[in-house]
Length: 304
View (cartoon, helix red, strand yellow):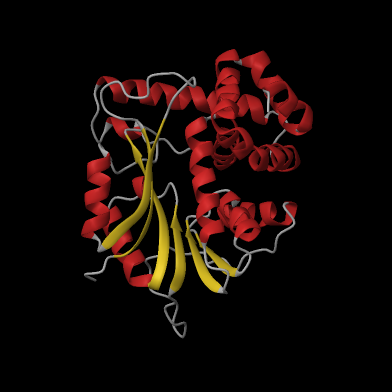
């Protein structure tokens, strides 16, 4: 579908795109690129995210997004010049939660690597067995991953874990807006012991999407995912390579490092993809160290 036809079909997206185009043509070009690369893969986010932002976010959400993009761009520039674990997270200033969530959602619509990542997650949900099961989502964020789970794996009981009470509220707001059931979410860390009287639960599927770079010891999280995954279960995990941001605390340098970490936790990789950050469809995607997201579907290795 041509981009102009796509805009005619998605009115809320078109309104958002027009505001971006007027303010920052470069980011508007990124939105066009995202559509060119993913085509029909953009239908669901374009239908859902701009409408939710109009409903939930402040009226100046596009301006707030653009300001956040430029802030992250400055952190990335410093990191690119002197890449190390300290410059990865800049000055580690606390980011306004609303601004953070606006950026998480809007970037799915206008950056090809995040759009592709969500498409991979959607495909993971759709591939799950048709029988009933239990699904854990570690780090609810905006709730978009939960909404996708309810839409594409409704047979699974989806439970989100998050230490931020505001994330739980936003996720439930998104669920109501998207007309899916609110989740039985838990306001705690996934690896923390359950409260007294509550048994530790096993899961048939686990999602750790855009999580591992945010924790000091991702190997420990992977080990807990391994022990929490039921026999025959699958997990969807991602790692951000050389992507600088205020709350990225673990530095993933290469896909080899990602693969070794997954194997060391006792998993085998069923499917994987490196999703590069790129500005245009034909842009060179690797100059020096690779920058993008490594996404993998994993299960217990035969030896564990």
